[in-house]
Length: 87
Image 1 (cartoon, rainbow, N blue to C red):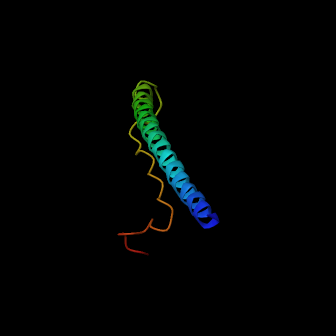
Image 2: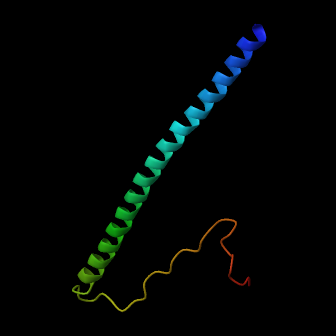
Image 3: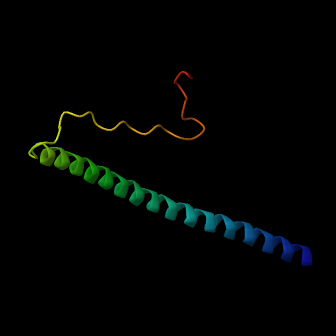
């Protein structure tokens, strides 16, 4: 009798943990989609701001608008140099 009750309790804990993980995962997916949307909007705003800056600077006398754009920052992390030769 005690063994059956303990087994049923253990099964209930496992099912509860599985359900909690499923709810957490679905919430993470929704938050990830929202984050991707926000990131895409930010990238669009940055591009628009860069274009507007270039258009404004083209009309400012004495400003060299033929300069090269700033270089992209180097990637960081353990796989930053993957595919590139080392110096």
